[in-house]
Length: 127
Figure (cartoon, rainbow, N blue to C red):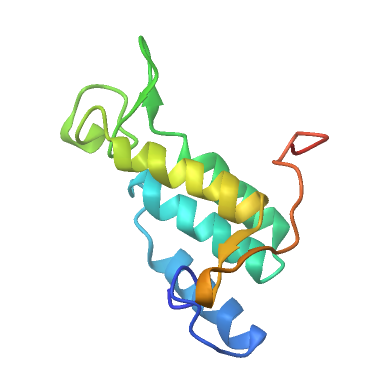
């Protein structure tokens, strides 16, 4: 996905098609950080429903008793669960909050911008 974080210039229709192609090719047992980036990209292309779905999947890999991130979605201790304490999954989730819903972007020459910030799904405000 070239639009985030690389910001490769492309038509909005190309960016949407790119996001849909990656989404269709993503393993349903995929890693949390991939879903987080997809949430950011779907917000950028204006597909709020798909962004919310991917955002939810980005933290769907946390399991009891401590609800730490795992690499995959298997909850039974199998190999589908992946590596425990998968901190890059937590980092991806935080990126989806800051860059996806907060709209925070670091532009060239050190500029910090906000692009279309909005509350997280099922939230009423973002501070």
